[in-house]
Length: 328
Ligand code: SF4
Image (tube, rainbow, N blue to C red; front, side):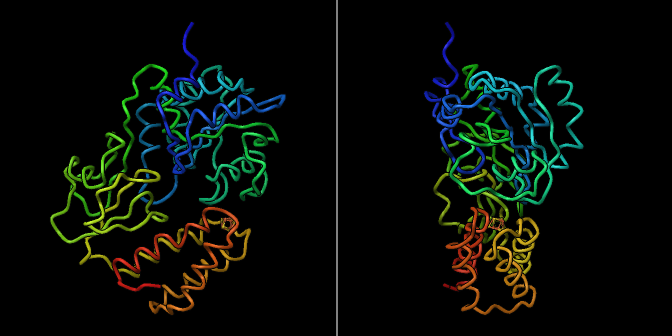
């Protein structure tokens, strides 16, 4: 008898690649054991943060592997059907190819609605259901009450890709990195997940010869690290963006982040809706009021409804402190 895929995932110690790093086997097991007449599997292909493009690379180059992972998940949790939730760009580029691979399997394609927040797992359930795209209050968690009120498993593209690799015995503790910014060889690389950020930059021949800082784990929400801080593995979505310290306009960079958050949030809660707008005003005026900025960042972290708002202070605080030498 072949070994159960959930057991294989547990032995492989595969962590979800959407950013949170939750053990994959546990997520699958929770949905398998959840009570419900129908269950769903969703592949989150809504990737949309600046500088993160490895899921698109996988869909383009290894769609069969990703779909095989989805089919394994459907069988493991006994799902009624699955959905692939694609951002608009990936939908227009890859939906025809995906439909051919899917054939008669019960896997639907869905074109993302709403802004960046549409990629949050409960917001994407709202999106598929045709509702206003905003996160839900948790608990209940999706494993218990997700799409159409049924137990639902949501993983991203890379996680399904690696679930398929685990099943075949081909998972070798690697992950995908999106590397970009002021580098010679930008692109997507599949390398050991244990590598430090410095090793990733060196292995891909992207380690700069100039004074630089990097943003890791997302080109908006990612934390800023200095050259001497790169001896730890890359966290979150596996992106590394290199910035030339001398050539980077700090206000332009912060403007890029805050415009992304202000346009990509859902306006559901006041700290994030108002806070991002007020921060954007201040940054566009190119004059920081440190006291007000501290208050906005504090209320975002402490009182936002979802992780998007709570995470906004991370790039700003680390950038202000490490690069602009402003300690809020
Ligand atoms: S923090 Fe609030 S406004 Fe911002 S995305 Fe989350 S729910 Fe929407």
